[in-house]
Length: 342
Image (cartoon, rainbow, N blue to C red; front, top):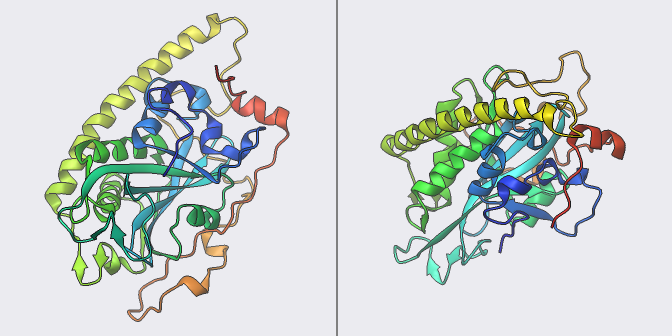
């Protein structure tokens, strides 16, 4: 069963920078990864403006469309996020499971019923699963997604950024409008495919690398295909909700800036905050990168299927993110100290 470090109804109060970049915490945890539902992440980032959540600077850099090669061929999205204010990066998995079988077995059987059974329905378990140490390989192990293969890759264009709060809004809309899991309809293929299609519609400048796109939605002889009506319906609902979200963030940000100087012992505006909303604050191009580019990293050959169609390969994800090491005092000056739980 997936667990969450943030309880329902308290996400907006407790979501902190260290929930998305856990290794910045001075406290240790035995958990391999943590999970947030779309509603928890959405509320934590958008319920009201709070610079400590870094809502203005956490962007999605790259998204991989992944498929588990065993069992029910579970499909998921691997997301590379970056806080452009601190240049920290981490991996998230976004996928749909059902509450009775959060991790699919090797035989592709859900709740005792075959994958194609129309009788199998249940409550969905849509989740953002957060790496605790920046290791893609470890996150795949923790989420029971090995062996896996990445079918496609989307690289978000810097001039058309995708913020994490925007992705959380989209995931929330899909979860809200399709809350019931059915193995033959609103399954993991539907969830990952619908979010992927909506992102492409929302950010058309994103660069697509197609490796094995023909395997998306495929399970044996079966092929799940989304309709244009489904994609357009979700995108319209997402676009309308996003306008409301950004209007609320702009208003609460103005209120925060107006009231902040009056608070006793208040700090100055966090370095990296933008004066307008929203505006991505990217590192200067002249600054040396702390990580190699995706293309510079070696690929893992033993998990790649043979390619016979001559299509371009999707470069492998980096096996482990380099730790962004700062002194505790420096980190506190950047992200503040997390309030003690009461």
